[in-house]
Length: 376
Image (cartoon, rainbow, N blue to C red; front, side):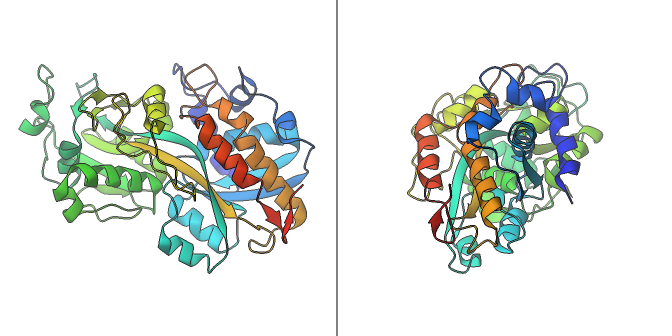
């Protein structure tokens, strides 16, 4: 599947009508206020085509950047939103130049690269919303981690259950049965969501656990963030976990969630940005923004990474031209590309990297080689 198919969905997110966090088109996103020129941001033009696959959370990012680079840099970037797990597998199989993956690489992922050195670059962070379709409930509900866990493990089955009513006094909740929708594919969004639920509910941790693929006791599965969003929008009484850009596209109502500091926080861009505050960044840059202790942070914020080989020629099968294209893409990603995120008109609804983390990305980028030689 080529990127043109996923581009349509990604650009639809950016064009979501009436939502300040999303713009009217990809050209607006990349040439609007503060976005900078793709050509100027990456140096000399590189006439190359590279491909990537993985995270659907990050798909709107990569598709928007691809549009900017196609027009300003003559660089074609084809991205296929297949899910984080499939993206890492594609990189291991050398069928893509880079993988989009929301969780950091785990030891079993590293083992799959068979000794070949890989880099993971933090790209941005996005809120994972608890979006619902409950007839008559037009205002945002309040939910805690343990109650969300009870909903997704089948313990809480009605929208007017005491566990939900006690958190939402004054809200008229129907007796409608709850139908949960989860990701059927290997998903970084699932990893972030279940990591949060496992951290806040010992029962969920033992009953379901955390990971890119888990077995939910109830509900139905759908592929990718788009699939979950579509299922929730079409099913009264349903609830699902979807990245904010997709929730905005479908005009979902989503819950405020109590964070580790005991504050009720809605999934906004500032609340996602706050998840970076005080974060520990390991030497391999495999950071996590889930369940931040910062008082103003939304608790279910997932980081997303771009993974590639340190030597994409020797280990990933790229030629020198494609390697230059990959470096140009990464140069844009950690420079002008960061200015495409925010709450303004024409910006993508993600949290940009703090300058200190973007600097670490660029320091790692300088170590990228092609057959052992620096890529220039």
